[in-house]
Image (cartoon, rainbow over all chains, first blue to last red; front, side, top):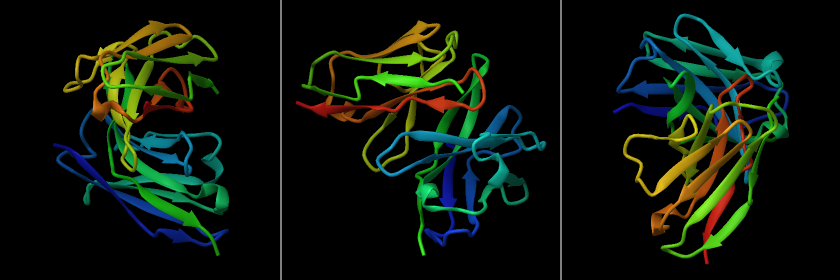
Length: 122
Length: 107
C-alpha cells in the first residue's frame, strides 16, 4: 500500500525559501506511469495544484507559481521535493504531496499524503 | 485556465437523504473530471474519475455523471461517514484546477 509523508519546516520567514520533501513508501517514484505531485490548500479554502514530476525529468508547473518553483526527485531516497522561493503570507497553506495515477487517459491524485501546514510569518 | 464552479457551497442533509452536487467547467472538458472527498483535518481522497468511474473501494452509493461543462456527484442514502467536503477537479489541461468545494453538513 503506497503511502506518502510530507516533511519540512512549519514556519518560514517572508522572502525566504519554502522547502518540503515527500517520502514515498510502498511504491517507487521511478515506477513507470506514475507522476508525483504537490498541491496546497490555503486555510479554510479550496485546493490549488502546484505541479508534478515524472522520474525521467518531465515536470509540469502551475504557471502562477512557475517563476518561484522547483520540483525535483531523488530516486535513491525515493523522495521528491518542492522549493518555493520569495514566499509571502499568501503562501501560507497546508501542502500535500500526492501520486498521480493515469486512468482512462488522464491523471488523478491518488493517494495523498496527510499534509503539512506551512506558515509564512516573521 | 479552466474555472471550476461548484454548487451549492454547502448543503445540510440527514442520514438517508440523497444529495447532489454540481460542478460546472468554464469550457468543455469532455469527461475529464474527478471528485474528491475531504474530511475535516484529513487529506482529500479520490472517489470518482473520468466523470463516472468509481475508484476501487468507494461505496456504490456514490455516483458521478455528466460531460462537457456540467457534472454531478450524487450520494444516495447519505451515511454518517459521508459528512465531509467534496471537490471536483478537471484533468483536461494545465494548470489542473479544482472547484471551490461543497460542504455536506448534518441537518
